Image 1: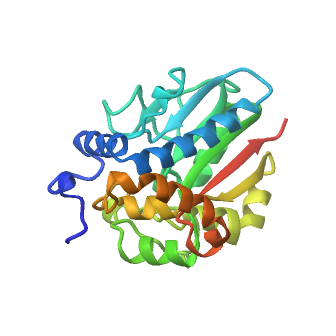
Image 2: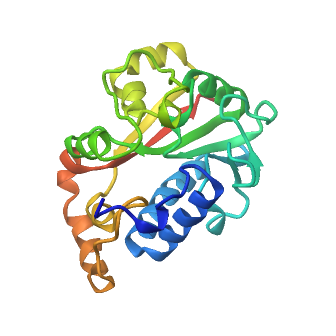
Image 3: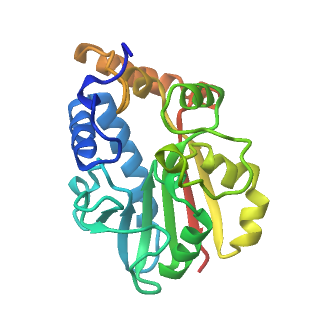
Length: 254
């Protein structure tokens, strides 16, 4: 398609090369990097509120660059060689109460059984530890773009929380965070009473939309970046209709 990012043509989704190309896109596109800086800033701020020491783990690091902001973060991915460690979110190779925070950026909707992940998070987090995640929101614009123009699925009417790993792209469902923390919130709270969902925050969207993100062409000349940054701030009242992502903070009870 005309708007597809040509650098990704023929590159296998989720491969090491895919991650390398996407990391380069983040660092070369000011609006995308600004978006990721804000995302990581929110997650690192969440970790700073934890009252006990422990390591920070990022799951599904892929193309991300959190270590440029905090070199102590342990990065991980299911793809060998993509990060510090190869880690399955459903079987965390860490001792009980050893992690201060767990970060996930566009990762929750790839975990085959989120219940297993949350059980592992409860086991490995210190009291008061946080799960901080950035994922696809459930606004009208997000449903339109991610539901119709993205290779991964978006099924807000899905039954249950587990993914069909035999489906294309492992059955990833970008509606998963909405299903868990909005539609099935009461069920989540009943199943995981040790976890409190503290924050669900819609994030700026205008600049990221025009930037092309990590899969589409950048439509923004560099000279317009400052103006679009200002428009991001000016359009926050429209977030309930147009936001593409949200920041969610979940805390393990002390």
